[in-house]
Amino acid sequence: MEDRIEVRGLRVDGVHGVLEEEQLRPQPFEVDLDLYLDTAPAASDDDLAITADYCVAVDAAVAVVTGPPRQLLESLAGAIAERVLEDRRIDAVTVVLRKLSPPLASRVASTGVRIHRRR
Image (tube, rainbow, N blue to C red; front, side, top):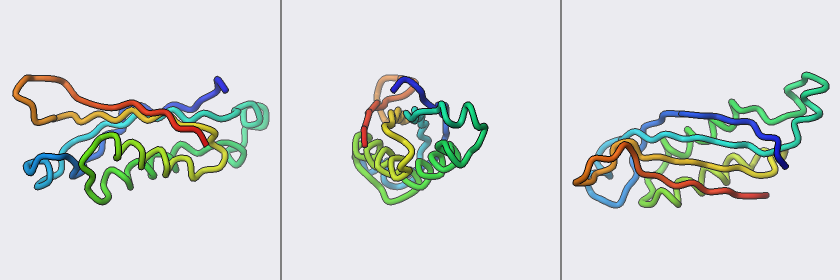
């Protein structure tokens, strides 16, 4: 399936990480989502009811990032994918998750993971 709905640059604060300093206060995360589904019916009928609503996917990602703490980005991204795939119209999802202020001695713009999950 080549069709997809894209969400880029969702910024959400959450409390996640392995280090104690990461577990004490929220830090910024950025999420990109690719929702894979057949968009042809919606393209021809112009009807939101027959496609995935990206607002629902965004709300799912926000709920996970603002939810219970996780240590690993892999776990957090996996939980986002699971929540997004609750929408049965979505066949697969790619989640890109970036930690925007990672606690590293070297300066980096972000650290992150990219996962792809199918139904």
